Picture 1 (spheres, helix red, strand yellow):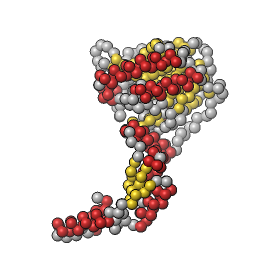
Picture 2 (cartoon, rainbow, N blue to C red):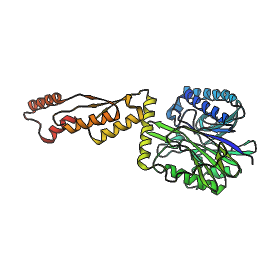
Picture 3 (cartoon, rainbow, N blue to C red):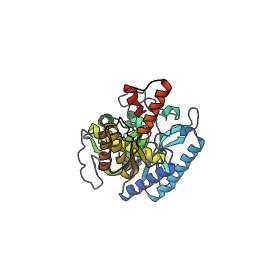
Picture 4 (tube, rainbow, N blue to C red):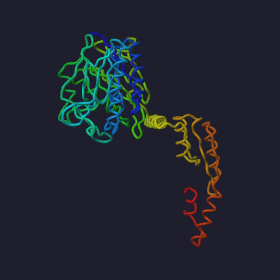
Length: 392
């Protein structure tokens, strides 16, 4: 078994931005080639980002995806000898859905491996069976130099215990005796997900005695945030490498036949077992989600109401981290029920965050509405109803 250099390209693709996603992949492939990698691995559906949803029902979108694949084939000529592992929707023939969720290996302008995802999740936020037909129960192996490399797509690797599906693609692939397994993924982020991935794939690697690399996308897509945290597993040592969470990363590793090493051939630093503290996890997830939501919707500025309380203070701090102080404006709207501290706290907070604070008093507006109510209803607002008038 020869040494094998492999690059894990943990990217932040944008749903539907096929040209932009191709640009991300081309830059990562150029880096992998410069680092003398033999293979560069991208996330699941990296061409379109995960998940395109009902865009997959649009013929024009599928045409753009097919044209994008042709662009990647041409681009691969710029990295001779480098194998690109790409995720993309592809057409199929025969009965059933017209598309497959595919993994394609391309090199020097040609597709050398095509593998279709077998296990299509339809639980929680997933609805893949709506658009894709399951792939055949077969293993896909590619010889690269002296290495036999096998391939899986996300859910295909999560059923090694056999508890969720009748088919176990991991076991089928193990029967083909690959020297290394590559799995491409779009696994959303939540508390405990990182540890769940490590536990499942370390157990499968040990059971089948196959080292593996797991490449995940990052980024915020409306209500979903993907955390990356791509990793490498050896059968004896478990998880030995982990890419950053909530950040793009292009990392080249060396498999020397018994262990994973850095691109320079040095021992890898130990993995932090506990991961991120809970509040730090939430902070990074929220900031990435906010930043990507704004960027992908095409706006860069936010206006946030500042009451002087904890909720608005936290919202402003997160907005500043996500968008920058120059892109956030706070507004306070005091009336007769506002305490001096609420306005003063807003002023101190905004000064410390370095953001503009607009003060727009609504005392006269609240007073006029209260007077109109009293005139129309033959009696004034009192108590809690009067106090809530400011908020309304």
